[in-house]
Amino acid sequence: MTEIIFNPARVYDFVRQFTPVNMVAGVQGIGLEKDGELIAGVLYEGFNGHNVWMHVGAIPGKRWMTRAYLHAAFAYPFVQCGCSRVSGYVEANNAQARRFDEHLGFTQEAVLSGAASDGGDVILYVMRKARCRFIG
Image 1: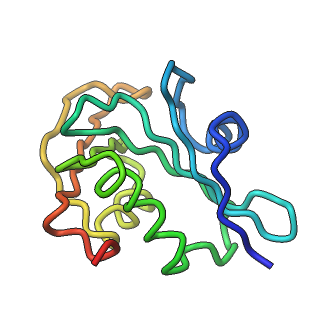
Image 2: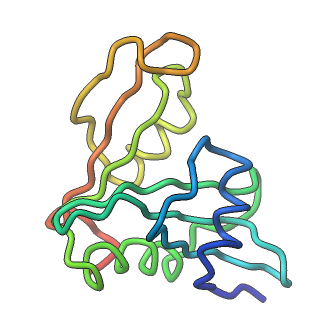
C-alpha cells in the first residue's frame, strides 16, 4: 500500500541520497511510502511568495509517479503556497534528470555556465502554474 506523507525531516534525509540539497529553515517535504518505506520524496525550499525551489529524489525502478502523488507535489506550491512558478536545477550532464523534468512539463529558463560540481553547466528549469497539468 502507498501513502503520501508530510514529514520534512524524513523526506530530507531520503532526498539527500539523490541530490545535493542542504537543509534550511522552512524546508517542507512530501514523501511517498510503499509498505512503510520511502520510495520518493520532494523537498521545497526558498519560498519567496512567488517561487519555490523543488528537489526530487526517488528509488530507481519503483513505481512512484502516481497521479495522486504528482497532484500533491504540485498542489503544495501552486495551491497551498500560492506560487506562480516552481524552479529546479539540474547539472547539464544529467540527461536522465533533464528528461524527467521536461516530461513533467518543466521548461528550460537559463544556463549557468561552469556552475556544476564537475565544472560543467547547470540548467535552471521552471514550471509555471498556468502550465501545470497536475493541479487541474
